[in-house]
Image (tube, rainbow, N blue to C red; front, side, top):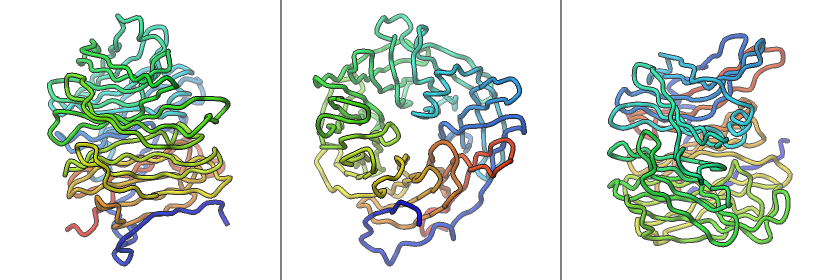
Length: 398
């Protein structure tokens, strides 16, 4: 028997269905036979109804790694593929550990990819327009504090603005607002006297403010904190003023793959998912719901692994009808997917055992389709590396 179990709360368990019955299609997104591809991010172009995948492609013969972009139509057909340039060894490592980040400009449809780790030249963005023409720009390249930045997430805002969250070289959390040229409009720092990492951001329904999730902890050893990490949930307005904040007790030893993530539902409610495990041998992911004003609504366990299991990675995304979807990878190779009501009731589930390769799973949404992407586990002797993309019909929709 495999060393894991999954725990979730379902108020109306009789209504839970197996999402396999609602799979619309399942497609491989292939590399050429001489390359190994790694999935790094997924986002949606709502203007053209396209799924955007970002990752890396490593050529076996030349030992070169390139950032790669795939543009997929709603039926799973690979419309276009684009190389975004070479990736350094540091880029490759950060992509595998922390994944990539991507968003789409809601006005222009440009795909924006984030190189999360800054070298001596700063953090960079790759911006690819609808004609697959790419350009690069640096974030805060004129600022001394840009060296050593680690940016974990970005949000595309109205008026061609971007919000980035992460940490600086002084181990303080940072929130940065820029234009599309990378010029800084404002920067805010979170310093609670420990090591702060901001890991996720989400815009409010009205677009006038946004929420940031992260953690603060005192590190005493490898994957060990002196006490439970403090999970931070912060609300800023568009001018960078901190309007609300709340704090939760988190894990004693969270892995980077289970750093907190935040989403906003169509109702305006805010959800944060975070690890509450007591050691590095188990993952206990909880979901906590808040009102727009950060008043607590509920807290539930959504995924738990058995002690001694490898760390679980996850993704979460808000969809229509005030629902959210969650995907987690356990044992490095098994996928778990849930579609849930805002109160945490599970509507449908999907389990794929032994199918996931290196990397995590990603979820996103277009009307009538929930997309789940993951790196497919390769069979012994099989060349190349396929990225698997499947579309699931939302629960009880036509």
